[in-house]
Image (cartoon, each protein chain N blue to C red):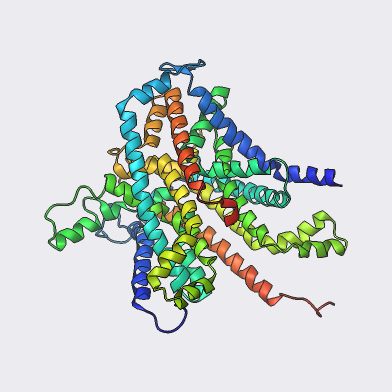
Length: 284
Length: 280
């Protein structure tokens, strides 16, 4: 009986395992293998070279690009955390009817199910040279010439990140907040804590798992991003993802692969550090 | 906090929330409006008349690449990814209720699939096909690439759902003589149907909108996000916004259908909650 049961279990999990094997493990292994290959202008040649890594790590461009990518990730992380926490806090603790909470929560999550590329394009009428922001500021007499940095700059890249990814913070933090036993808040109040003290000493520590999960999402997405940087900076900013995409378009696959391995190691290191703070399996 | 008058903190946070919602939806609303720009209008305000010119323009093939074809491909791909995501996540969710050898590994693979940057998956699958001498295509390599993004969401949702599932329903069915298959078909699936619709919503929309994972895996024929991305570099007319409006419209129809059917199922369940004493 139990032999039959374990067979059924493996059969049930097989499709999932197969997808991860074929489209996650094997491709990542391919990247690692190809990162040691040799290449010329037309083809890749099987070999075992460290040259791709040497060229990458000895180039100051690489270091600058990684530095800029990490900087994007940190700024975006801080902003999305601040905004996401505040929004989740309002819906979880200041909205009283559960129906209203569900509605407001849905309003925050619906954009997640729409196209990121379109949501980036939709900033053009706002931020362009003749966009709403510049026209308004000129009409108000605050500036004489259009601000050039609004679109196609680091500013617009970070703006797009915050616009696209804040909901990755809102959802897990909101989830953590809804699990907080309300009698704890009452106890804090009875013990004489002010609203602010309750927030800092009771709610914030209990939201740590949600914050960690949100942070993992935001940081890994920004670290690997290239389309936002390319679209919103108009090619003026750099990111590791963009660097890889450029190598790919020049058919320098092994160079892109070596870069991918380094990026993967960095991302896994960051995630491992954050995972120490939280047991994800307990949070579902 | 739960009783009495609203304090200043409520209004301050409420205002912040409204600003956030404006920030989320404002830009999308703007391109919705601008997509009805007159034939002579540009990419920014003011509106130069109101027309459907740019929508017509969208469906003229020579003007903007292959919009109709890429939309069709993305819809088919999204539907296929949705189907596989629902079935595979549900079935894996069933398996994960008992500990089995390798369950830890598969769980961590799912997490890894979420956190490994999309572009690495795309690059890896693209390289793999290249090394093997196969041609990537939207229905093979891109299909697999999308599943690595939708399945972890599906699995995590199923975990959350099964954690709250009352196994006594199944035991009751078995005591009444139902086989395992009958139990799943007539007890588990109907109870979990709203969550399965939710998983389907993730499956479809995440695939339909996926860019990075399609980049090196879609092959010769573009999916819709790739087509849109290509257009941003060489199209400078409001046809871009018409495209945005249509694409977002499709997403909203799918989201609305999912949410409405979940709400409908909930209401029906509340009405027919118990059939005690109603036996014919």
